[in-house]
Image 1 (cartoon, rainbow over the protein chains, first blue to last red):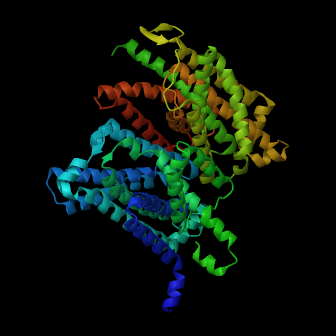
Image 2 (tube, each protein chain N blue to C red):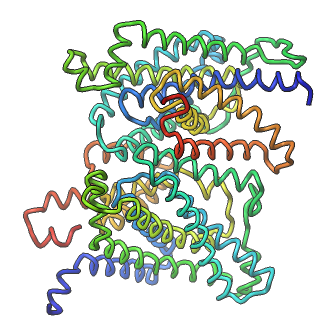
Image 3 (cartoon, helix red, strand yellow):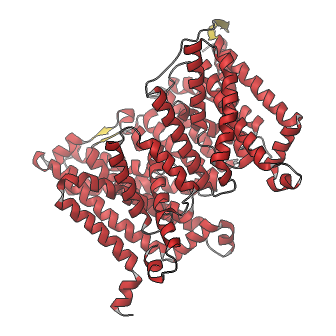
Length: 335
Length: 294
């Protein structure tokens, strides 16, 4: 296969990565919009990570925010530890990333073992129960500061030094989030075109048939769940450096899970380009609606969500694909 | 801890449990008939609480009166929700119905926020108190518990002793079979969702009789989360199961708090909630069909 064929075959991925890089360059060129662009990348990345599970399997996890929250806590706890034992900045960040991954994978492993045996509505209820149980355990047993939260600004100053504080809270996490955006896009693309991906889509369409066809449904769902939770916890670990104060109610707020679900659905569940389009549209409209119609964003979003669910169930990418299906070139690219 | 103390905790648990039961019934009823998990259940409870608050402060109407208004408005609202939104989603993928009812929930909360703001509201409801095992017990809470029992009994009688009730149970069992037998399935869905919503709103009114404070647009959220546990306890879709589940849940809540307090936990109320959600997970894993079904 020549280079031309390879390029055409993977055009979707190339377009995706090019847009991500353009977004990143825009951040460098227009520093005044840098935080808006990072917010955009944040939504795109988590939506892409969630897409690997929600979009591919059709299972709704309302407790998905927990993995983001555990990422936040993983980094925050690592920073506090490193600060008290005078470790270097690289070790502190590395420890944070590892701790975020370990926490998220432990909880996702337990949830996977318990909840993934359940179907549909029962699964959704179980995940609500789990994220809330986690939150109340942290508050009730006063783990990681309980309701008082973990505040890491002074620890970051100690580890990185006063003059590199803005590096630790802006440059480093922003770069980290951009790298994760690219990684999550790549992972989604690879999964989508692999045996795992086809198996997952079969589960979404009809789990019983998929099982009869010889797909190890529980294992497939479990793998997708762990990949998805790991990526989200990594975003959380970077985000902790930006917000520097972590509290249980925000870290396990079901409303954030719903925000991610809306983006996945808006873009098109199970599509590679969906999270990019859905995430950008969502972040931009949230940002601008906040200035044009302050206080009415949620009202508008609730109506918008209803319209998506009732009329455009396939999301932007899915609808575009159906609309332009007769053009084979576009059909190959938009997916 | 003497015997009277224990009796009083059990009494409180039963009153609270009866109220939890009636609050959870709507969720179970709607699921039983339409297979839709109604995430706007909490928002309807919140509107019930605002109904009680508004009629009490504006027209000095006791919650015992405004509960009828809540029931009537609830039926209308529920039927409207069915015809505008849920009718197209019967039998659709869970993802779709969960999102639709969640969007509806946010919309109803936003309406409340635009109308009442985010401040906590409350009204001054005092109906006297009685001596219960040596402790003072609020009469309005007791009336709330009794009212909850009465409403549950009426609903059960309606479902099991009337033709319309039989039609609702038929649709819940097998919509296609019911349709073949000449039942207007869509009408039954509308009535079922209307009844479920009416009970959610009435539950909100009764909840304010237990404690008439802390009403804000997110008032219903804790009740929604607890309703999940209760409904799973009693078996998703079962009306009587939901009420009994509520009683068990109320008893658990009033007994867990003193236990965690005694064990010197930082926040006993959070630990009680933690235990409730762990119970939910264990139930889903071990007995997803509920405690009472074979």
